[in-house]
Image (cartoon, rainbow, N blue to C red):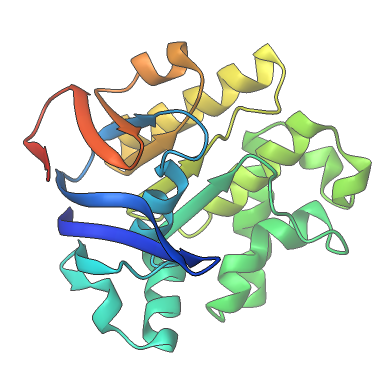
Amino acid sequence: MIQIENVSKEYQRRGRSVTALQPATLSVEQGEFVSIVGPSGSGKTTLLSMLGGMLAPTSGTVMVLGENLYQLDVSARSRFRNEKIGFVFQNFNLVPWLTALENVQLPLTIGRAEAAVQRNRALELLERFGLADRADHKPSELSAGQQQRVALARTLISTPRLILADEPTGNLDPDSRAMVMETLRECQKQFDQTVILVTHDSSIAESAERKLRITEGVLTEEQPRLNVASA
């Protein structure tokens, strides 16, 4: 599913090199649920961004579903990301001028699915998340928990093989946090989707099958299932 080999990331800042991620090797199988923990600025989001095809590594290779992501051109990588990878963010990343329904439809709109298919699938997911009566509401008219449910529905509409979640429960109340985690576990257990979750919440991290830690750019495995090595 995922294989990264000697992947690192360095930035140039004020004339000097800053290492965000030390060379690391990691394998993740289809259907695994993996959490990544570590202090702010340790490299967690950097790693997640590279796995999602949004940030090219300084060195090493990133293989996802048999594709070497950074050997694809920009348009091919964007198409792959839209078809195979779903993202869940702490700040939801909803389009403010679109309704909940239109936000959920967005991946299928980009993929040029038939309008009726888009609408029916989006309404089905909104109903699943208890938001059928909010379909015509803009994000500013929804609570934080409702916005995250819309974001989850948008992620799931294209049935991605890989879900990357960056602090998806960080701004939520306890009930909404529980709903997010229940949904992600359902994706893994029922649909064999792979979930990689970045979190500061230790209780959420412990619920994953594997727990990785990044400290000062060094990747280690605290709760192993498969082989992970860092250089």
